[in-house]
Image (tube, rainbow, N blue to C red; front, side, top):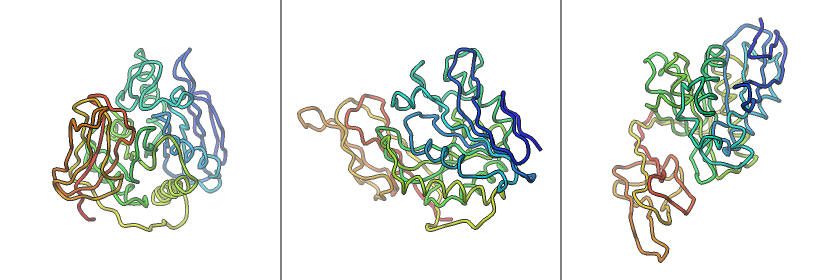
Length: 317
């Protein structure tokens, strides 16, 4: 059994670090390949699609170092930093070279802008090697998110169900169906790969507790997939969001959220306000139904069209 990606090849029982080439003059992307001693599924784990979501990057780096080939059944492919220039420059959401959101660029273009070329490289060099895909995110520099997961709702029903089964293995209180096809997770789902996008933390920082919890989420999923041995660890029950609402700013100004990520609220409850520099109210936002805050902007300065709040309606089970 062996695994070969780009210029990096590992044989059964080996672990190697390498660089995935995007283009002749483009940044190379750091990756770690682990080839287990026994047959099993191949799992792709990516981080840093948004380069300032450091908790996801730190989680992937630590797991890639800690997991031993002799403990793996199958293969693990860690793409450690998918957007390296944003990582270095503390840039939120976008690839600095072209100002575009990499997680809106899939399946990408071979001759497109840098974000499109990175997406194209992932789709054509990594997806064919993967049976399952985990894309580790976090709240960006201006966001806080509750621990939750997206699974691809735009995939075939069997892929969506397999993805949901993986989601249930994570020790997170909420999973949500995503209809996006232009993100890494949704695109992988449309290619027949059960996939998840994981969220936790934010603000461009991480704590030791958050990283350890995130690592346990990933290990739980790998245990369910029988890539690792062990028992899943669960401290919370999980619910599914069957309706989600995404609010964007209708005006510029100063944003004051009324709640925190993970807070629940009743229909008509205040979600936040935009005020001008003198403190006068420009726009208030209220919940349309009983819901839970999945993530929200915590940065004060807001432009028209900026994301403010995402919230959802939950059902049990």
